[in-house]
Length: 140
Image 1: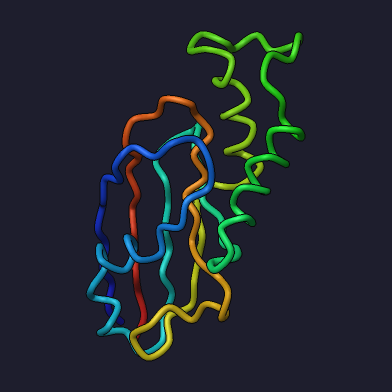
Image 2: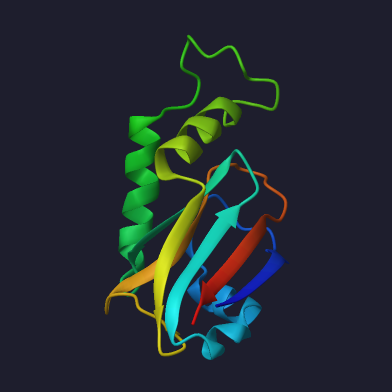
């Protein structure tokens, strides 16, 4: 069994859904040493999240942002936690709905994603600074 772990700081992204699959792979070149295993990506923040979805058509990411903003609107009158602005509490809710980690099988040194799948950073804040990811890969 082998185990690798890297922490990477992403640059600031605008609010929305962004493909980061290539960034993850660049941060974990050791994946090539794993014939069968798992890769986990964890985000160390409470107002951004990760998910896996469509990697080809950018309109999917635009639609994700539009839909989640309808599901979790800003300025709801019942929000109490608004210390950092109107996007603060909605960002926390969105992050919990989407999740803080993704797992992807590793096969023959490559992510075993579907043809149209990629890893997304879901940035839920208007003015977020860079985000930190912990990327772990283990297997044989």
